[in-house]
Length: 403
Image 1 (cartoon, one colour):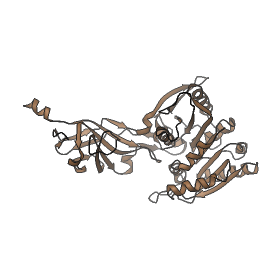
Image 2 (image 1 turned 90 degrees about the vertical axis):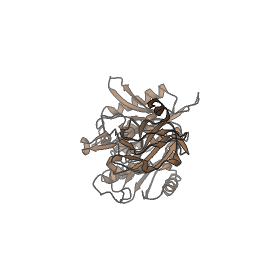
Image 3 (image 1 turned 60 degrees about the horizontal axis):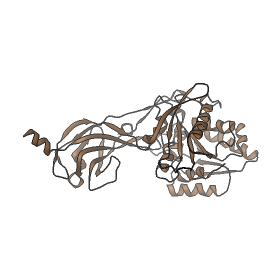
Image 4 (image 1 turned 90 degrees about the horizontal axis):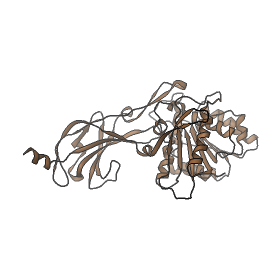
């Protein structure tokens, strides 16, 4: 009798916490239950399930943990909501040079409140407090984590995305993303999970919109400071890029750089020490020596900061003035970060049409700061990259640059 009952039953064979990339960091968006056979979505409701500490806001069936909604499917996706701390995978500890980022690997407790019926009519028994068995990090999982050894024997960990569908004989651009000091971490995947500065390029590549390699080095400690100094990681990053160009079909005319805060500052130094190495640089929420920046007048730069950023805005404004005085072709404008995506794209494209190779754009007032967030000294700064990498027209501009 017990054997017959088991034969008539079906059940959950895995539970996955599903996360997605956001400008403020990777966060939990759903929980996917995988059943041994297809479930009928019309027989299920969100009230059939519970997740400890989270609210279930919706439910659907599909053929994969991130699959499209279907009438039936072996996966039941539970959309979740909760307080920001319970959804975020990123936990920042400390401030300034001592700041560290810790990546949380949540294990959730899931309950199926009643026996359910599969699409074939078998019973999927109720269960209580079953833990999640894995985490789906989305596009971040398509990066490989490796270690590069420099000529002098130092070790630099890095994350590399390789285009999914490369054509033999064709070369592809590479995007270097360098993270901020607050994302320094012992977790090598922190550059991928701290925001969208790395993953946004990989998402577009995956969908064949702008196929490219994406390089996201892991810097466990601060490597560029406010007194315009960099550590050994700067030249190691250039050496790593040279190695990747020799190892993969990289178009050396289309090496792109972008970085936020500390990463932006280190990119400025790399660009000054290696002129015309980068086809274009998108510099986000950082600053560098205004006097030395005059040497970048022939580079293709787009600088974006918040006007409320106490360091980045005045220092980079001075750098752009110096570039103009040195004979550089500079165009400046300002936009509201609260405008919708279409308006922001139109504003950036309008500025691009002026034909300047040196562009400076700032977000107006406190427009980068959400209404519910307090204005603290760093709020304008860290919210700049939350907004900047979402602007499609900025990404388009970068990929239009060539040496």
